[in-house]
Image 1 (cartoon, helix red, strand yellow):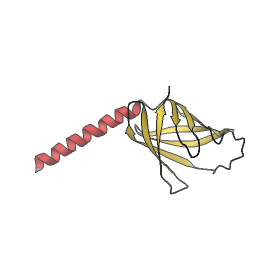
Image 2 (cartoon, one colour):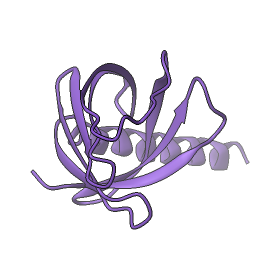
Image 3 (cartoon, one colour):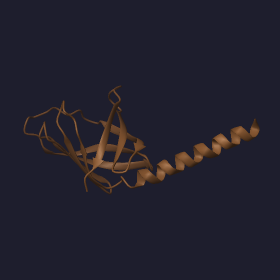
Amino acid sequence: MRNLIVLVLICFSTVTFGQTNECKKFKNGKFKIIDAEVGNSIITRKGSKQIEYGEGSKLKLEFKVKWVDDCTYTLELKKVLENPNNIELPEGMILTIEIIETKENSYVQKSTSNLYDMVLESELIKIE
């Protein structure tokens, strides 16, 4: 029984370590979220800066990125770059993003915020 528990722990550690390495390849780049309801979004992330552009809303935002660990980061709104439809944005919101699955050219993320109870899952496809 003890050997079985040790084997399960070793396998879990290997899977977790592999996921961590896979998350690192998505720290920087250009990504697309495909969403038929609200429109697609283009995200460009480099270092501690992320720019998001919503094709449907025409909203363009700049966020400060802070990596908590290899697969989790936070986004804090720094600037509204474009807002032609005058969409009201909540002040003080911090998004926490957890990469829950990695694929060859994309990842699935779970997004939460400090202001709302909603949890969103989306897939980001790396385009550059």
